[in-house]
Amino acid sequence: MGASLLLVGCGRMGAAMLEGWLASGVAGRVVVVEPQGAGVADPRVTRCAGPAQVPPEFRPDAVVFAVKPQVMDTVVPAYQPYAESGAVMLSIAAGRTIGYFEARLGPEAAVVRAMPNTPAAIGRGITVACANGRVRPDRRALCESLLAAVGEVGWVEDEVLIDAVTGVSGSGPAYVFLLCEALAEAGREAGLPGDLAMRLARATVSGAGELLHRSPESAEQLRRNVTSPNGTTQAALDVLMAPDGLQALMTRAVAAATRRSRELAS
Image (cartoon, rainbow, N blue to C red; front, side, top):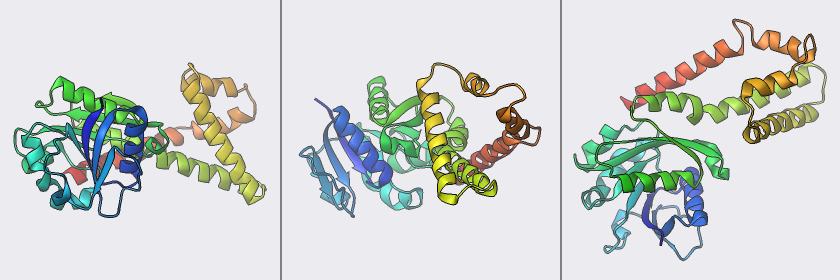
């Protein structure tokens, strides 16, 4: 029998997680609090417009916060009774620390802070989570199952590392999409028709990503496999791997995202 879950917010990420829970069987019953509607026709799912409409007899094993960080102040306090009754509180909101939830849900609240990314929408995300000291092993295992329904899961013991996770994987899909845009634009500059350039870029980025996913070889080795000495790929890599090339640029970008994550958390 699956877990009893209370999902607060059912936007893109919340909906992706809900779909994963239902498909994997980790969810036994789910109550979704979403004023706009969950859009899910499943007998295991009950939709409520607000916390006051949650059935009074419902006792969730986990409460999952999937609302935007800027509305958390008005949303979170209503769920304090569930924290007091032993539910683990799992947040996937960027910039909201474990301490933030403890302050609003009580010092005894069991809280897991998680940072997923958007490929969760197709079951290929990766999430890194951090738990406070009040999360029991069985509740931690439940959170892992909930997050694993939409991709890979990792854990850190130091919450500060969540900011770096945000900079690498949380924001990372946008970097890849920008790479696709830039590659297509470079193709247009080289004389290719725009639609063909974008088709080539999309297929190359998605195909290379799938090869990286399936291959047991490292990213470095896969790069070497494509690169012939003194060939065309090497000529391009001489530019991208220059001291002021892609690595330096990516390091600055991740540092900027990490810094902004810390600012939001404070």
